Image 1 (cartoon, each protein chain N blue to C red):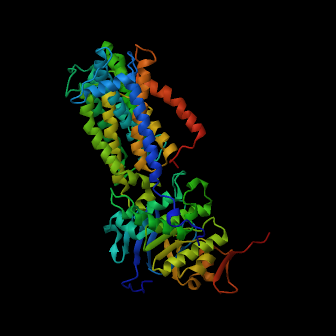
Image 2: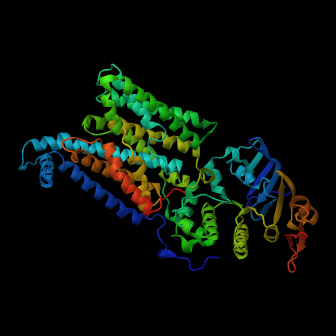
Image 3: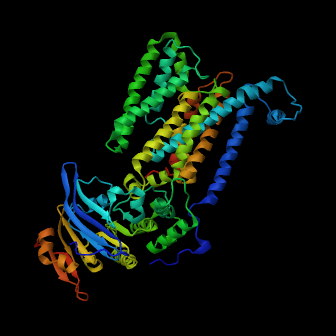
Length: 358
Length: 269
């Protein structure tokens, strides 16, 4: 039946490995450029050369002339590096979790906060803020701990709601998440209105930000992020099969319910950790995975790592904007992500097809 | 039915006393059939007879009320999903896939049941996928995304994915719907070729004449029950066809091959 089929060396590479290589390089280069911005820009503008010298000076056995005020070293290492690392990790985590959610739901509206992760976390944080608990716990403060627990409880409730027999219904999962989010937001609003003076931190949590970023927080969050990411990554190829639909995936040998449970659980762990570190930062987890699929195709083995790299670059970049546009005042980064990312995404929507969602 | 004895070389898929209920609808009742490696079996019957549900039940994507389904004597209910997918492949009637997925990427998904969770496609997986695309006649447009394909090209892409599974049992749900008459013939020639390699083919067909000329046996399903099964000429008799499809339908003979041709007769204006 076939005629004129490509043979031997003329066959194009089905895995598109060559293509993946340069897109990865390009994305990593972009990330480095943005990290450079993050370290040099701010209230004090420090030249790139000086920042590089500061890093070289830190290497064991090397000591060079910094050629600038001594406060710069403190600014770079105690303020900017942890902040850039935190923004990068959170951006990567949100975009990665978002890609995982979109992979499971095959729904363009899916994002890391879909199952009520954000509202559960916000309620948890609000309870911690208005309660008489001391401010410190596990090097994090009770706020992130409560936020994490709130997010985790919400996801478990939504999952139990949607489970019937051995199957988990996507629509019930999504609607359950929406309904729980509405209830939790109402309770959070109530706490905001009745909590008096103590409630201002709730606002800063709801908008998200990195002004309290510290090494300690990053290090506490890291294990959860790594565990979640490794689990989702193991299922990357299975997510490719799941893009067909659940029936075809089952006929190709995928245990659909188990895959959903594992990937959603791991992605929710990542999202909840990100929220505990930086509050609720919308948009990144929704938009970045779409952008990745628009430009780099639908293979989740590329989509997941590229979403992480570009999510990191995007959030580091918007955080730079957040602390420079109205300097010395800071704009909450969640506002900047929406205002900077929104028009860009609308432009892409208008000019390109949303890839990978049938 | 049930007279065929399994041999060591030929695969045997047997459905016995199968009933399926969806909601409060009894979709299949006490269905029994067998397909053997090397034969093309046509599953025919009016719309709503339960043909698609039967295909779905065999691959365990709908719950079965009672009955057994065995592959070479082993119950599918005791087999893992990958184990089933390594020997049974399905081409759905209207399969969903992301619009921007490329034909080659789609076909490669057929290798999934043969890979471990952390495994990646080897050179041999790629070779098998290319062979599947060449046989299904879609290798020349392997690089094209699905949303640019015609109905027939799209069908070939999904058949390639099924062939990449290297199945011993191939189930196709109306693979020739919406195809022109020559393309229909091409698909069935491919199915016959697969049968010569001892693949067992079960194909849901609406075009009874097509089924009669290409299938070794036909299974006629009506209202969820097996109406009759056997050689095409024995199944597609004037009486049975009218009883199943209505008085308007009539059976004539192909002038060269003598195979039954089923056509509706226009009523009086």
